[in-house]
Length: 166
Image 1 (cartoon, one colour):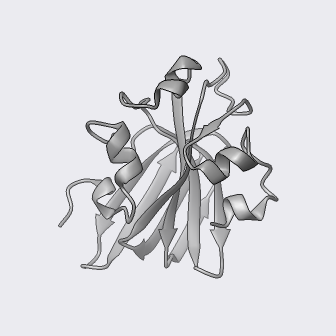
Image 2: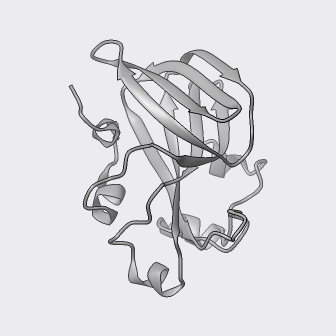
């Protein structure tokens, strides 16, 4: 049995290298979500509640204060969605149904997702930026993966499928 959501990550290294203790998924800003019927998978784009204490120096030198990433849930089943308020703060709660399936609840003011999925999560498209006073992320981003850094200087529009589908 796991004690922390990050124990479910297939690829925890980026986050574990940034944080001494990876923060819980409480009061994360939900920027977007993407449902892929082929998985079926649900990918959320979230801002972490705390900026990492071991962020790359170049990110800190730019005055960045927000870490953003895609968090993907695979083999999604029994999805229900009520409401949608873009860029709302949510809590993501995970509980085990059995050894290989988790129930996930994403809830905040005016929004609730509930679904079952695989107990194997994936983190991706990690970026850093300086949030505006309004909380907007429509600013320049620094991406962790070199391929993302070469392709993007900010978050692409939602029709850019190779950013949101993978």
